Amino acid sequence: MGEEGVLAARAGRFVSLAAVPAGTRVKIKYVGDGALRAQAIRLGVGAGAEVTVWGRLPGGPVILNRGGQKVAVGQRLAQQIWVEIGA
Image 1 (cartoon, rainbow, N blue to C red):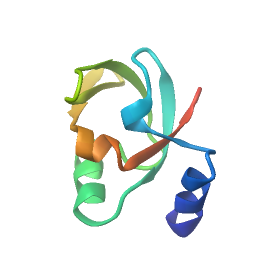
Image 2: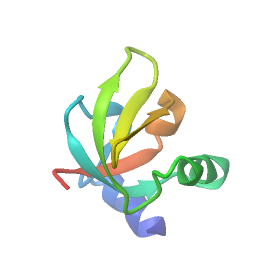
Image 3: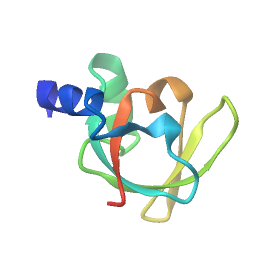
């Protein structure tokens, strides 16, 4: 998504995964650059993936459910993942 995704996130069209409450289904629209993007892709949460926020620990990881598989995403990465709610 590149620059368009960054601009959309800043314009409020998307929200950071770190701010999404448990039980919410989202579609990942943009993931930060470099090593963070590579880490997200390894976890199966790259742009286009549809996931449900299964749970979260205060100040800790966001736990995602994707196809029955649970994946814990740390706060630093979650803050760099921009999603569309209600995917």
